Every structure is written in structure tokens, then in C-alpha cells.
Image: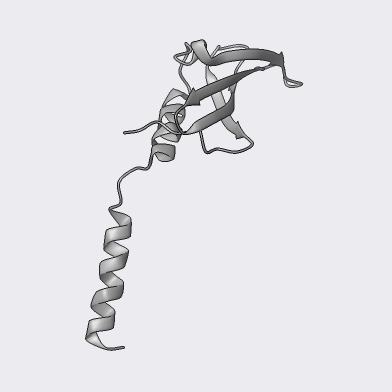
Length: 99
């Protein structure tokens, strides 16, 4: 491999590794930060709650922003009232928070 090609490939790897968070990454970061915490900073987007077979509850949220609609769920531990998991339903285009 020529030296020029090697420098080009390594530059691409370095630049890709240093890419800033996207708005979707930022959204995921906010939710990941809430794992293990009590309270609900997203309560204004809460539209439904249901009991899960394991005894926990699952809260459904709809978050609207200029990019679109985001439907996501947070699983809350029944005993500790702490968030233990989250997931996005359907198209995640609207699941974005500008940084």
C-alpha cells in the first residue's frame, strides 16, 4: 500500500472517530443517563402506562419536534421506581435533540 493511500485511510479513521454527536445520539444519551434514576424528566410527553408481565411498568411517551414524531418507552422497576430500560418504537426520525 502506498504511503499516500495509508495516510488517506488513517485520516478517515481518525476523523470518523472524532465525529460530534448527532441529534439522535444526543437523544439516546439523555435516555441512557436516566437509567438507574428515579423521577421523570419526560413526564410532559407521557401518554400511557401499562403493567408488564414481570411486574414493572412501562411508560409510553410521544415527543414531537421539528424533525418529526418520536414514540419511546421507558421501563420502570416496580420496587425501586428507577428506570431500567428504554426503547424506541417505529421510525426514529423524530428521536433527536439538537446539541
